Image 1 (cartoon, helix red, strand yellow):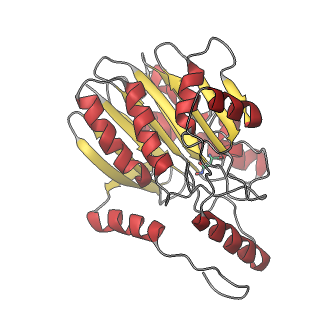
Image 2 (cartoon, rainbow, N blue to C red; image 1 turned 120 degrees about the vertical axis):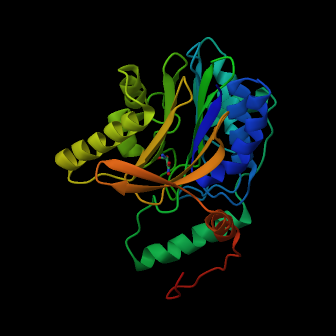
Length: 324
Ligand code: SD4
């Protein structure tokens, strides 16, 4: 059995490409890197890689991580600037004996030295988003999370190896140097080839409080189905956060176990995710929450097309007082 699961519909094209790799018995590592690179390279996804939205100083700072579930090799970059594919840098770092997590200038110098493609990651479109957000922020109280989606994936290859990866530009308008859950082992991702893997998206500050991806893998190790593990971990963290802090940010997760069984949970209704398995083909699901349980429905073609069309819509520079 082989398969792959990924957060958000934006992962679809990358997952489709990697399906071919997995079907040809190539490695889970290659499948993860290629699928995430496809998302990083697509300019209209404004939360990952090229075209990602900038921090409050209008710089695109990227976080990415890569974990091998067999060797436990782990690598990550935080607040990396001007490098085309942060996931590839994270993968390379995972092979080092030490110095596996590099930040900002150190990460950039490493990427340069190792010959990774340098690229100005701030696009004109992202500048318009930035400008418009400044206008909106003057008018209303905005949640920075709105419209921000990290790509997180777990893959299982035909040889039984599992790998997980994440890539994000983090929260829009974040402070310079702010890092969320995505590049942190256990929070944004975790994988053990003997059990399964998980990845999270949402408000990193809250996801980290539950070391959420590790918690899902731990529950799977206890024998829980990935779906049950996702629901228990996500909703108990939400409950804890509300009990202790009065509120919880948006949290969504995906997981796959070493048999290719999968699950997903989300505290919001509009979460989408992509699954490909040897037996099921590639499917995009949309989630609906029913208390502490989830209902997943298959996204129809109209919804899939609209998702892309919405992200590719022409953008206009807004002036104060104008609606979105
Ligand atoms: C972060 N978890 O930087 C990321 C952002 C994200 O959906 O996933 N948004 O906190």
